[in-house]
Image (cartoon, rainbow, N blue to C red; front, side, top):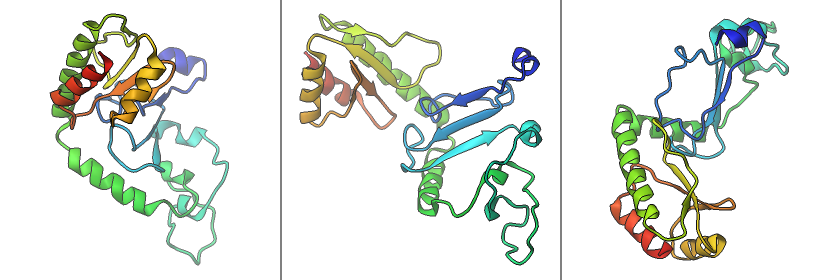
Length: 201
């Protein structure tokens, strides 16, 4: 990462597509900023996100909008001093989405300690889906095979949009983006894969 430092470039990672499935070592990768929501693989509520900021660069950053929540003693309402917190909470401005935070905490506690189990399960289901799709004539799998990958598989087939609408009408939840994007998670099973393949055939 020396090339980033030499050129004054911060290393920013949008982790929403993999966090909760893929392990990530912030120190080893020398990540300056990591940003993610909770509503995908982390199974948390929508309307909530977080930002990690590497401690060493905090003093290099300007606080564009200051609020009481970003102060060192944020619950001391009677001392009017501009005393920023020593960590990334200095960028917080005021009240937060406490109900969503409570939901995110529950989701994180639910999956804590199961990281490798979740990853292996998703990998198993995605491998199964990739194989079954490869047997269907006309299917073009666009997601590359990688050493470490999230649960997303993207593909096209004849009359893709028509097939997507048919899947949606029959309760199979996926996404259409000029192709069909399927995201398997650990709560899915082989029956879900079989049902999807049945409709695609």
